[in-house]
Every structure is written in structure tokens, then in C-alpha cells.
Image (tube, rainbow, N blue to C red):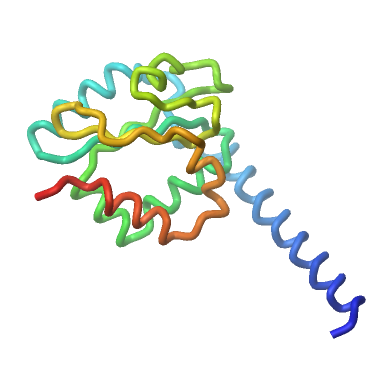
Length: 161
């Protein structure tokens, strides 16, 4: 294969990547997934109440509507098999961080350094005990992660029954 052909393939790859990212950004702007007016502390308390009655774990997802990686995580969480697992084993709370200037205290409370990137995740047990706190922006590139990574994460943190 010639150098010219390799260059054309590289340019095509970059164009496709740009289109994918552009679509994610456009979707992020058009379909909010975080309630920007929600009282996060109240929502967490309600989720813990539900979790304690059902034995499910609580997933706290810190993010923002403008964030394409947050939308990518949300899309993966709604794929059929993973969506069923999450509905059965977790109570999900989506916490809006706006432009990294909102609900940061809640991230700190649960050991999640939101400034390292969003989406950021913490997992709590049904009695509110911290089971996992993302520490290094592990999901900050969610749009580039394979489905298997999301599936394995939620499988690992589902309640032990």
C-alpha cells in the first residue's frame, strides 16, 4: 500500500472521528440528561432510602448536559443488557456539576475529584457506605471506551446476593 493511500485513510479516519464527536456534542446540547435544578443532596437521600428497601446499590454520576462523554456513558447505560442490569441492581442519581462550579462539595464528600473529568462516578451500598469512588477521571473519555468496559464496571459493583 502506498504512502498516498495511507494518508487518504488517515484523513478519512480523522473526518469520521470529527463527525462522531460533532454528533455527540450536538446531542449533548439538544437532549438534557442532568436536571440542572435538582437538589442533589435530596435526590441522594431518596435514592438511599429506595436502595435500603430493595438491596440495590446507588450509583452517583457527576456530569453536565454539555458534556459529550456524559452522553456517551448515558447511552451505554441504556443499552438493553446493561440497562436491565442497572434497573435491577442500582438506583442511579445524576448530579449536575454545571461548568465544574456546582455540587463539587458532594463530589468531595464521596471522594470523587470532579476536576479530573466528567462523567465521574461513585458507588454506594444500600446503607450508604462508599464502595467505589472514581479517583482519576476513569470515565472522562467515555465516548472512546468500548461497551465491555461499562458492562464490566457495573457487573463488578452490583450488590452481592
